[in-house]
Image (cartoon, rainbow, N blue to C red; front, side, top):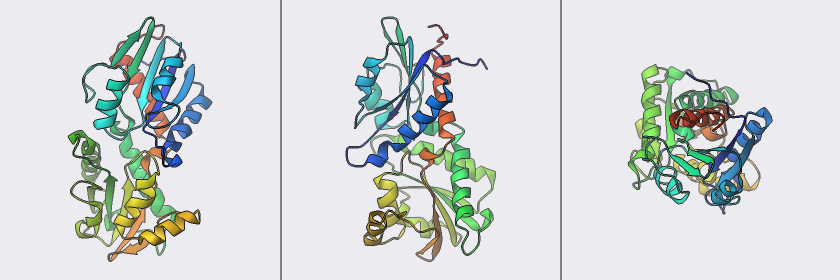
Length: 288
């Protein structure tokens, strides 16, 4: 496969962002800083949909010949695949079909596929599940075969693609035969996160949030859905502690709760791969 040179291009990491929670944008800044350190692109910029710096402003400020916009989103869902590319002026079909290329004079802008649907995210998920148990082995680190793995997502009825990335990852990991069982669970769709105690055939449970950031959903909503008291969650956060104590017993299960996948360091590599994939798909040469 031809290697794509991004040294003369700009890479824009696009996050959803939030005006209510600063943690929402943290992974964008984290991975942008790492990619700047590697000096693989002429420029690496952060951009957001819901907070500053706004995506439209960032794109308007770039003067390099090639710009790759990589959405730090989990799925090809309603915002990442419909709303945002439309508002930014990109054509092409949703769902990664065809090339989303926009030409502005001598400048080519490419809207890439989201990081969450990349094949290497399976390894990121497994690393998160392994790390949380190894870090908190009390009373002992259970074997994978004694454990049920849950991949937790948001879910939405606005776009059926929203849950596909999670279901696909559950299917891939299930086929590896590593865990006693593997399930995708959701905040707003069936099966619900609140039902893990019914779905898990084992006492040991590991929950990995398939979210980009450790925002309000990951830090507050999901721990309560797992069985923590809302008052306790808020008190722990107020004290600067993790909202979930690993492991905790909830509804007769011993539950380990991992950080979100989006903050895992390997995601920086996935971002680069998405940009290179965009260049190949749109048949862009380094000098274009």
